[in-house]
Image 1: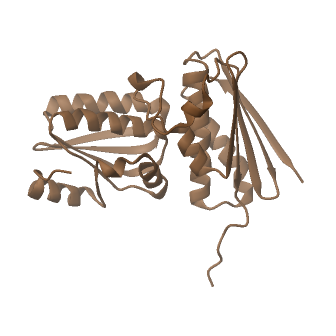
Image 2 (image 1 turned 30 degrees about the vertical axis):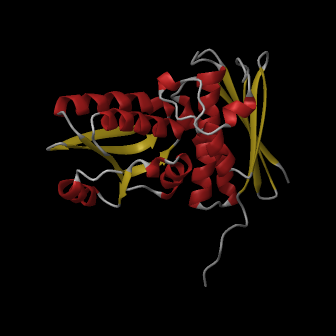
Image 3 (image 1 turned 120 degrees about the vertical axis):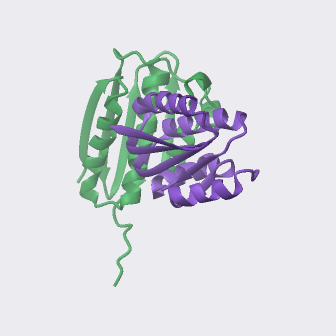
Length: 120
Length: 146
């Protein structure tokens, strides 16, 4: 079971996921996030995964897919609140090389407010 | 003494959570660390997702079989399908390789299974399906802090 919440703050969209993200829920997360990006005309995306104790490569696929979407529009993607298992998946797949990592949502928001023009 | 379990279920995405929790519950008697249990669940989830999406092309009539045995602190898991098989196993194991980019597959399933288990074996035939087998030591790895 995955619950999804979205909050827009200016050009930044925060997606908060709770539960276990696998193949079964990845399509729902994809559709929800795409809708929210469109509706809010968001430039930057923050994934708050602090309520997500489990994810598999299906989750990586969704996050990578949204990275491509946001990146094409010149925006950035940040992940925060990663637990040990999720962090290892990100390390294995090299996603840390293309996304920002912060401990908390607030850190990510502060950084985006101050240096949203920073290039990777 | 060896202890064994078997489950089989239809190739439905909603059964993925059941499958990894079933194996994790069976493994719990070895008193694994939280991280080891999370890695075991991830490996099961990857193998079952492959069976459903690639083996059976998401046809829910397909049956996924899981058997697991525990012996000497190690769990041995076999995830089997009778689907279409993998044409080129070496290619399938390459990081980021996927036959389903349109489904936003990351192509990381086998890489994750290899990293999260101690030993991984894949047998596949385009006529009889795929067998993924992995072993993971779970007992006797705890460090006692005094």
